[in-house]
Image (cartoon, rainbow over all chains, first blue to last red; front, side, top):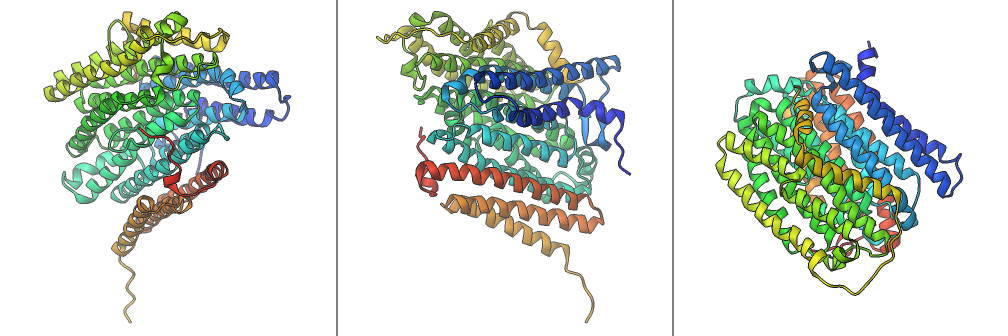
Length: 488
Length: 104
C-alpha cells in the first residue's frame, strides 16, 4: 500500500516546487516573445520558484524549531528533513538565486541566451535537495543524477564554443564513470544489508566485523564515487578542465551548489550509513585529504589562467573540508558547515568579479588580464581582494572562521600532524592568491576600458561582499546557523 | 540430473568482471563513443549485482533499483550523445586525445 501523507508532502514541497517551476519555465518559454524582455519574464518566474522554495524551507525550519529540531522522516525513511538538510538546502537556494541574477546579462553577451538555462538551474537545485535530505540509496542516486545531468548540459551551454563542449564532454564521461563506482558500492551495500536504506546499513556493519573484504570493497568503491563528486584527489582531474571551459556563471554554480550538495551526501553516507565503520574509512579519507591539499595547492601555483587557478584552489578547499570530517568531533562538523557556507559566498564573489570585468570587454582569462585593475576599477579590485583574502582564510573575512574551526577541531581531537599539514598549505595558498593581488595592484597596463554597469551583477557583488565581511566580523549568527545543521 | 540452481557467486563474479571490463575500456579506449559505451557496461554490471541480490533476498527493492539505473542511464545517454554531437560538429573528430585544448 503506497500512501502519500501530509508529512511526506511537507518534507518534499521545496524540492517539488523547484521541479515544478523548472517545468513551468520550459513550458512557458513558448508563450513569451523570443526577445530580451520575454526572457526577462522567464527569469522572473524561475527566481520566484527559488523564492517559493525558500519560503517553504523557512516554514520547515519554523516547524523543526517548534519541535526541538527532531528530524522528520518521510516516504518510509527515504527522505529526511533535519537541520543538516535545511542548512545545505539554504546554501543551494542562495547560490541558485545569485547565479540566476548574474546569468541574465552574461548569456545575452555570449549570444546563447536560452531560457532552458534557468530550468536546468532549478532542476540541478532540486537534485541537490535530494542529496541533502536523501536517506535511501535510490533517492540519493536519482537526486545525484538529476543534478549531474543538469550540470552536464549547463557546462556545455555555449554550444559553439569549443572549450565549453570539451568541458561538458570531460565532465560527462568522468561523471558517468564515478557514478558507476558509486552505485557499484551501493549494490554491494544492498547485498550486505538487504535494504537500500542508509540507516539499515549502520545496524549491519558491527555484525560484519571490521575487516570484512566485501564491506571494504563497498566502502572503497563508494568513496571513489564520492571523492570524484566533491573534486578531491586522486579523482580531481575533471575539475580544472570543467571549471575552465564552462560558462563562468555555471562554473560558480558548479563550484558551490554541486560541491556543497556532494559534501552533504558524503557526510550523510559516512556518518549515518558508515558511522560504525569509522576505522575502515578514516585512513582512506585522511590519505585523500592530504593528497587533495597537496595537489590542489601545489598545482595552483603554476596556473596562468584565473579560472583554472580558482579550480585548483577549490580542490584545495575540498581537502580542508575533508579534514573537518576526519577530526570527527562536533567542532569539526560545525567547521565543515561554516566552511562550506563561507566558501560559497567567497567563490561566487570571486567568479563574479571575473564576469563583471568580462562584461566590460576585458575578457579575464590569464592573470595578466587583471593587470592594473586596482587603478582602472578600484571597487572591483578591492572586492576581488576581499574574496581572495576570504578564500585564503585571512581575518577579518569569512574564510578565517571556517579555517579556524577546522583547525580547532583537528587540535581538539589530537590530530596535530594533519593540522600542521593544513597550516602549511594555507601558507602555500597565500602565495598564489597574492599573485592575483600583485597583478591587480602592482602591474601596469596601458589599456583603458569604458564602464557599463549591470544591476544584477552589482547587486550580487554587493551581497556576496557584505556576506563575506559580515561572517568575518560578526560570526555569531552564522555559527548558530551551522549549529542548526547539527540539529541544535 | 539433479536440479541445482546456479550459485550466487557466479552471477556476482560475472558482474564484477563486466564492471572491470567497463572500467578498463573507459581508461584504455580512445574513441568517445566507445568510452561512453564502457560506462553503460559498468552501469549494467551494477544492475546485474542488484538483481542477483534481490533474487537472493526474494525482494523487489533491487529490481526497482535496477529500473532506476536503466532510466537514469537512458537520460544520461540522451544528454551524453547530444554533447558528443556538438563536440563532433565543432572539431570533426571523435578521438579523445584530439579533444584536449585545455592544458596546465
